Image (tube, rainbow, N blue to C red; front, side):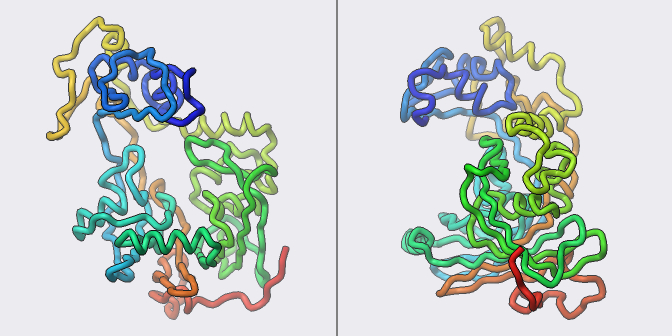
Length: 379
């Protein structure tokens, strides 16, 4: 644990009440009672333990994988040093939260037997496109050194946005970006944020939506999504940055119509886990509280990590029926088309949603074949 928790935050407060807000407030005490928490390799049963700097905390929990879309991962290039894939939408790059097997690394291991891949860069879970992995430590070190010393990495994307994006000129957005909800990685335009610069060109429009090409000159979290929101052309199905929580104009020009504190509360309210709960076992909270207080002892205290247990009495996901997640919620009309340095260039095919109707010429083409607008100007 970092210094922000050192010597003042009780174990149950910092480990779950603040870091894992979707869990029952009684869960940390119940997990302690059942011997599922380990601190510095020692089993922890004192829920009032004060977290110390550099403490290593392990939690044995009952896992439920999030669903993903049924897509095979296409390999763009593969040699002894680098593997490049066309990442499908819906899966994160590496294990995080409730994603373990349903990740790009997990599926490459399951589908192709590829192990020990090293993450060079990331794409958001709902974003598709070109993704690189190093196959050995030497290549990993080399690529990351290139990033540190300022080697230019050209990153190009396609996206589908609301509205008729301006034509015949390049649109540049260089507004700084900073965190709004740190625990969820949600960003916003803020003067004290990090510098960010994006360049946009319209490719075509149907009068209601537009296909836009983007080149990143920096690599901030959610940079394209935040800059398009600021310009007033949010990505069509962006369930984070294209909602009413950002104000009447959905954050255009950085005008949220409220303070950042209120905006943070409104965005959190939109994305709280209980919004996906269809039916909750009414006895669950009572049962977890009674276990936490030592009033009852469940039949099975521990979790056998060698077998897949079907049910855990204190697992929230075992006791909640959730709403079905639609495929539209698992993907975003945002696709990484191209990664290029002075040494290599990798690109994917153009996704179907980005091809203009009746345009058979561009079907299946790679990014270098895609036409650019000829006239550019800063705006």
